Image 1 (spheres, rainbow, N blue to C red):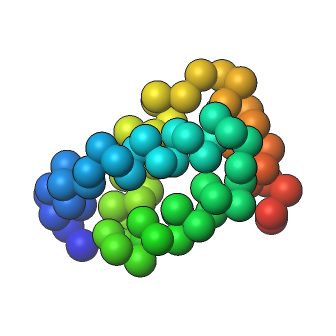
Image 2 (cartoon, rainbow, N blue to C red):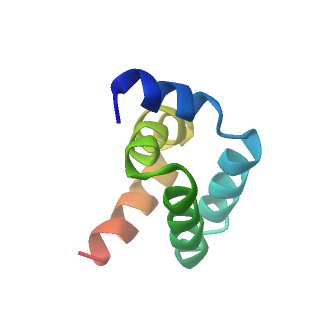
Length: 77
């Protein structure tokens, strides 16, 4: 997928997606976060997820939330 296609697809992601992901993080529900992540990737693709995660979701998190999320992700490795 080209960069411009990824950016176009990322722009089409509904705000509800972001809200659901943020709610799962706020409630410290990593299982729900993973389910939402899988559904996102199934619908939009991994490249769009990477763009969305790195440039939309992460910048919206406070330091405590980022730390929690990264710790949970590292536990799964």
